[in-house]
Length: 312
Figure: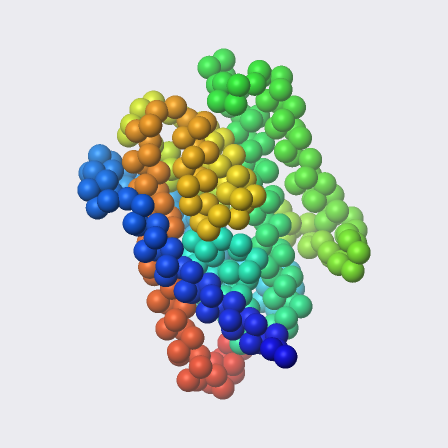
């Protein structure tokens, strides 16, 4: 029988191969002229602004892992969680099925640093919960704060938007209540021990800030092609991201674009979406994939020395 370690190694290999293939296939959807025209239509200052927000998002994502290892009481240096997070998510964002793809990469790093399989599973689960809390919190902010008379992005009236916004707040509020009371949640054989209240607050804050940065990056690029508010882009992005998560399409390829094009008017924004995909998905992948492969080679050659220093 194939052992669990071999299955995880195969999962990592499959994630890396899929990521490399998707770079080729995804870029093949657009001609060089189309990508060049989209980039040329966006001022350099806007591209720089979008890239700063992309960097801000990935910085927030390292915070997901930093809080997660604190949650399992195995705190690591930020450089370690940042390395694991960036490599895992730069690959996982493009491959899809994050629990398997980015989860397998996380396991490769954290198991070397002394975490057990159960602790790595808790880290992955904690990060997944942070994603859900961040999406719901940003959706609530968009629905509750953007209540002007001309905001009809979702075709619903003011009262319905308020009710929807409050509904989005129920889960984060209930989560904080569970954390304050330290009430464990049981689901069959699974048991979720809530983190301390302060850690939960940081979890919601950094999760929301992450998605706010992503929406800001898209807004920087879309604002070039017409008058569009940040709240409109953020609302469309939250909807598109939920659709991408449900579809499990690698990197939300096509789903993200189709959903946002269906919500936001004007076909010209496809140029902005192409630029965003390059900046948020392809550029990090072209950095993260070689970094992961290099780290595999480095730690395989020097496992003893690494293990001594990593937990110190």
